[in-house]
Length: 626
Image (tube, rainbow, N blue to C red):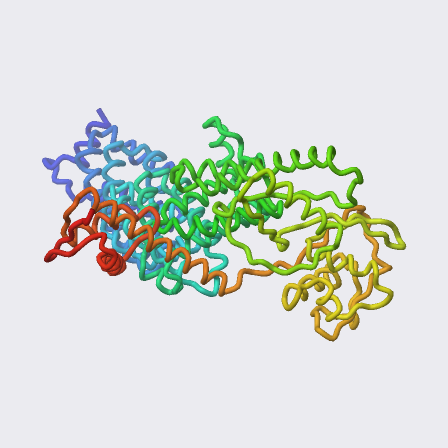
């Protein structure tokens, strides 16, 4: 009875107590405001009991809920106005903190679930929807993504998702990817690091999609679209003046680095983390904690870049060149990885793309069989065993890159063995011609030093230089070495530098110094010592010159011309008559997997075929001539 009478006094309009009613409801709202602002200190039990009283009196929904919504609206608007002047990162953190506090307050003081829903919807509308322009500001987003601020990006995505605006983040996200990627490709000063930087960008975006965006497929598709856009943007690629795909060349060189040096060539930021390993195990794959599995994953990442490239002919040319050097010089970190990569390329581009690459591996196998047959032949033919154990790798010229012929005066024993093999091979394979590439040869030389005998693993050039000291009674001059070996210029200088100035100094240079000059003299280093019996004397690696690189790109461009002409002839042969625009569109579609061709270049090839009487022009159309 007493409680009912108290309720009528406070909340009944018949009792004329509207001011008292307002004071009570307003007082509870003030207590909520105190709790929000933290000043002055609030007795939590007092607020909890006050709200419970409103439930008991049955006036919570009619009087308190509208009032708390109204005061909360004013608070949220004030909060948004004051915090919006700060940076995006600070605003995201403040909004997250407020929303968590509001949810906890509703639970702590037993606010009705309807009230909680209305409060959160109000907060979302005022703080997120009304400030969406700030939250989606392209410049601020670029700063967060550039700093790889995963926490803020996750907070932003979660905030936008509360108001159903998360998809609007995709456009500024993709713009950032395009601009950042284009800047990486067009940066000539860091051209050698292009692929590493692109992979680091891709890795950071993958982690953001995984850890911040809840693996949202829309962002994954947006990222792939952005990568495909900037990697094939002709205006971006034009800064390199190569006429072919620079990213194709650099991707091939990156894979070469991986297959030669393995995982140690990569920065730690690209390697798998704990979550990647757990995901791989759940999917039944080998754990990326295994080195071979991690190398395979890194090759897959490189192949992801390769998929975006339209100019695959540039990749093919440089990959073929690097693969040949790895196979011939025995520089592959793993033969399994080499064949695995070839399988990936065949699955990606078809057998036509990998035909010559596969032929290289077949040539190596055939060369082993050829050498075994030759050794068996020698056992039955030559009575005296040669002091030289010759191993020859016979390769088909069509499948391998071309290498320059460098004159080298071979020792008599080696020259004799080469002549014998040459006669044997030509007798077995009529009509074939062997061209010896001494610049690719390497050998093992036994050397006797005062401190112990060693087995030196050297190139053919290094071996020929070393053998000259067997008959030398004193120092040998630069000119004497040049005359005796047949080497000149840079080849001789690099060879002498590797023997006298490198880590394993089996020769001594006089005077001492890092560079080799024509006035220098050289002697056998009697003081040479090494804890290992087998010592590898590294060659001075000659980086690819600008002229060689330019020649490769010119060859790619020439091959592209022939492929374009072949495409035109194939199309015209099947269609007989076609209009100019239609023919150009067909040619672009047919050749896009090898490399993008400009319409002007296609027109030039059409003119060339008209001159060769393959097709003729009739008005604005072309007719195939059988």
